[in-house]
Amino acid sequence: MAYVSLAENPRGVTILATLWPLITFASTFLALRLYCKVTRRRQLWWDDHFIIAAWILLLVSCAATTANVRLGFGLHFDQVPLENLITFGIQSNISGFTSVISVACSKTSFAITLLRLTDGWMKWFIWGLLVLLNVTQYLSGLFFWVSCNPPAKTWNFMLPGECWPVTFTINFSMFVGACSAFCDFALALLPWRLLLRYNMYNREKIGAAVAMSMGILAGAMCIVKMTTIPLLEKGDFSCEKPASAPLSLPRPRPTPTRPYD
Image 1 (tube, rainbow, N blue to C red):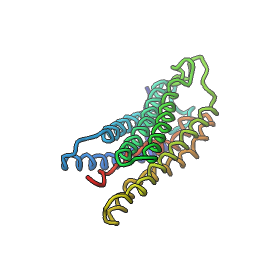
Image 2 (cartoon, helix red, strand yellow):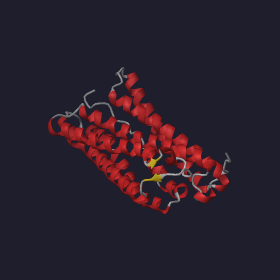
Image 3 (tube, rainbow, N blue to C red):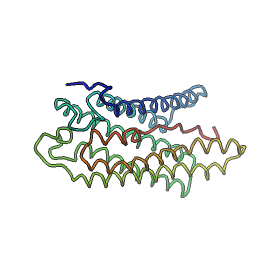
Image 4 (spheres, one colour):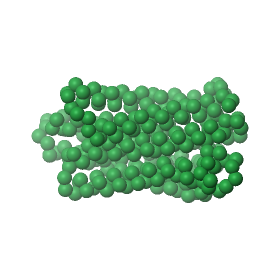
């Protein structure tokens, strides 16, 4: 393989300068969450395990993207060394797959937290969000590996075979993005109604609601990312994909301890 100098790949530098501060930010909040659990002698529950899984997948995705930057991710496709393309394709699939599943795990974690606090129609609504979110995200992750015949063509474009139309991939990605943004906003707004039930000081209610509504930022980032997806129709994946790569990685947000803990 021929490694590409970062001096020759300014977009790659931008990717790295964006990804690693984000994962550091996410890691800090996750560490604080676990610290609070441990110091208060609270047992880890399913929402904690899902958010830890999301962080691990996020780390793998960042590592694969970082490795791809060294191979030419950020350059125009015809500038990527030919001997790098197969490894580049495999690592791109790994990065995309783990990123998508990380998104699913992160949002599932928060939804599970809300399930512990709700009843009636709100609980059924959250279950509906969970089904919608996980079906669309896991299908999206699966498509990284099965969108070509033979499947190996998904990471080695030089193999003979056929792949799904680019327009289908783009349209499905837009649909998944819209579902993800909807789930983000829904899960972010539910805590405001939920916290009205609890006997807490107003400042505590507002603080908890704001912390639990950080998904609004994730939803906004998802919408921004959706505006960059059509760029992939140009076929210059290695150059156009970085436009959305920093936004495609989920930020595991800390779901605070239950208001009555």
